Image (cartoon, rainbow, N blue to C red; front, side, top):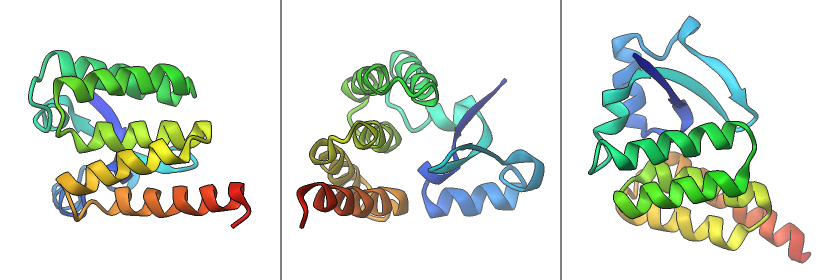
Length: 143
């Protein structure tokens, strides 16, 4: 069974690994939102980043589905539950940050990106989305 996760939400090292395995090329990619491409991965690869492969992963999957439906509040709640089960889940933090950003809550988005970067300082997308949220917040404040 395969599970769709955001290709842009995984680290550069993981992307290189996926490309070397042929899992992130050509027909495997599809545009899922303006912010990212999706890659098909076995669920166990995603779950392995979560401390509890049961409950945390279930909440992560729910958050992902709600995010794709643009249910920002529902996604935030589900990712928050995943994070409470697995506090070092960088992908859940980044996804929740993206949902906050979609709602215009840039301060909370930046907090999530910062937390993700404390766990994985090389997480390219956390840095990219953080910079974007800062620009959007400055634009809203007229800075």
